[in-house]
Length: 389
Image (cartoon, rainbow, N blue to C red; front, side, top):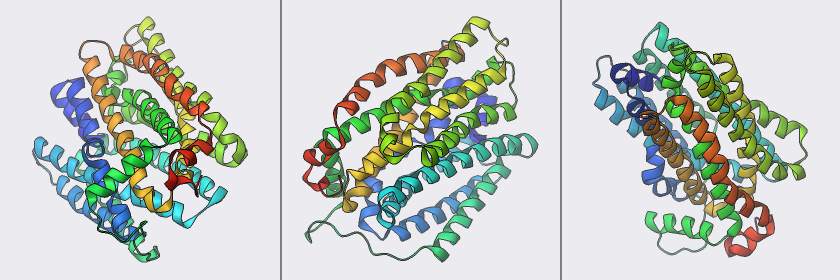
């Protein structure tokens, strides 16, 4: 967020600001499945500790005052390269430790925690950038990764690398291909991936034009950008809490379709109302409220994640998760860049409306495929997935 605001202040270009926002996701698109295989090739606790320590060091370098903007963006890309192996190892390790509804509840709580962390992070970043400087925000970020690496080193149980199906020679490229083939053979997994990628791309595209959108609404402060960005994860956190604690496990999967629709419809409504009202006339609080409702709908990620993991055997979860999340973050980057490109010729409000409207149309086919492929189909589509499904 600090670098996005800095770039927009210097260039006044929605496209360049969106590109800066997207750099944090591009490593997933460019090398995510490849990097994620390390979660299945190495002890997962080592992957977690090493990637957090590396991010702490690089972010500390970014915090040096006066660092040229191109170098900052390059270092941001390096920081983002650590995300695919970390997230793949974290997800695979959690599914290894927990099973059944314990894993489903843990997934919900993890997602809630992550979303609340984003709320605090966006609001805190807005305040820090406004009161101190981007360098101060980056230094605090570096300290959080150092604390995480130390905590993992001290408290995480040491486990060996997961065993594969055979003892033959393995390569990173082979592991990457196996993850892709595993998903490609299962209609159920393909449907889940389609919903995940398409729904996320359009639901979060507007984040790439947060700065020009806030300016158009007449609340162009850095703190207002943080508030707008925090509304969605706050909604996801509360929606996830309701799913985890109040919805029976056998009914969670049935919520995916209505929640996906709920995540996109408020974007269409907010954009259209803002366009009709005109620049500076749409109440900022109304847009924030609609973004919050969109976040409540976006809690569909929680039951969908549980369905995905249950269809993939433990030895392949790092690779399969890496493929899924690589595409997830990759489409977020593409969505943000597409929104920024659109905002070069259209108002940010129109971009917001188009994100919701086109998203509803685009996500309909994978949603229908998801409804038509029950959980048992995942097992039939892939021999590796029979025991888990």
